[in-house]
View 1 (cartoon, rainbow, N blue to C red):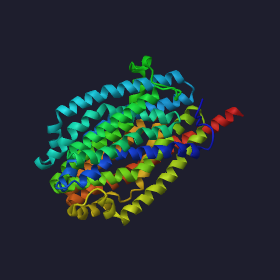
View 2: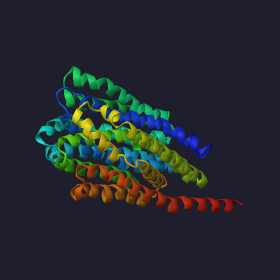
View 3: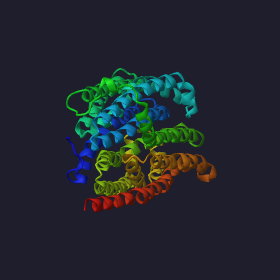
View 4: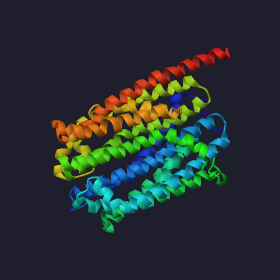
Length: 456
C-alpha cells in the first residue's frame, strides 16, 4: 500500500500532511476572508456591509457543521480501514459520505433559503444591516451543495496521502475567487451580492476538481457507483464520530447567534461588525494549529489501526508541543499589533478605535486554545466519539454561550461578550487535554507495553 504512515519518522509524516493542509485551509479561508476585506473597504457602506456579512456567519457555519458531521466522521474511519488493509470497507465509507453530504446539502439549501428573512432578524439584524445580509446570503446559499462536497470530500484525498492535491482543491477555487471578487464587487458594481456570486462560482470549480480526482485513476480508493447507496450500518458509525466536528461547528453557530444578538443590545451594529472582523482574525491565527492537528489525524488513525501505539503517542506529543508554542506566538502578535490586524478588514475609524481593546480581550490567553485542538483531534482520530462530543459541548454550549449572556448583565457590559471566549479556552481546553492524557495517552502507553511483551 502506498503512503504507509507506519513507516518513517512520525513528526515527518505529520508535517508532510499538515503543511499542504495548512496551505489548503489558508486558501479555503480566502473564500470568505477576501470577501470581508473587499466589503470592509466598500465605498459608502461604512461598517454596515461588514455587519451584514457577520449576520450571515451563523448560517454559513451551520453548513460547515453538517459538512463536518459526515467528513470528520468518515475520514478517521476511512484512515483506520486503510491501516487495517480493509479497502472495500474504506470505499463504502467514501461512497456513503458522498451521498450523505449531497442529501443534507439540498435540505439545508431549501430550509435556509425560504426562511432567511426571519432567521436573519433572529440573528440580530436591523433594518439597515438586513439589506446587506440578505443580498449576500440568498446567493451564497445556492453554492451549498458544491461547498459541502468539495470541503467534505477533500479530507479523503489527504487521508490517502495526497495533501498537495488536497491543497490544489482549495487553491483553484480561492484563486478564482480572488479574480472574480473585485470584478463583481467593483467593476460590475454588484457589492455584497457580487462577493457571494464570486464565492459560489469558486466553490463549483473546487467541487469539480475533487470529484474528478476521487473518481480518477491516481487514487487507490475511489468513489464508485455501487457504493453511493447510503450504508445505514456505516452511517451509524460515521455520525457518532463526526458528531464532535458537528457540535464544534454547531456550537460555533450558537455562539455567533448569541454574540450578535447580545452585541446588538449592548453595542449596536458597530460591535456586530467588530465581532465579524475579530472572527476573521481568529480564523487566520487559528489556522496553523488547526492544520497541524487535522494533518495529524490520518497519521494517528493509520498507526492506531496498524497497532503502532508508541507512534501514536509520539504524534500526540509532537502536535501538542508545536501547537502550544505557536499559539503563544500568535497571542504576542495580537498584543503588539491590534490596529494593524483590524485595518486589514476595515478603514472605519470608529471600528478601529473600539475594536483594538475588544481584540485584546478576545485573544487573552490564546495559547489555551491549543490544548483544546490537540485533545479534540486525538479523541477524534482514534474513534473516541463520546469524549470528543462532550468537550465540544463543554467549551461552547456550556461555557461560552451562557457567559456571553451573563457577563454583560453582571456589569462588564460589551467587554463581557469578548471575555467569554478566553475564559472558555482556559477551562474547556485544559479539561479536554488533561482528560485525553489520563484516559487515552496513558492507555496507549500500556497497550504498547503489552504488545511488546506479547511479541517477546
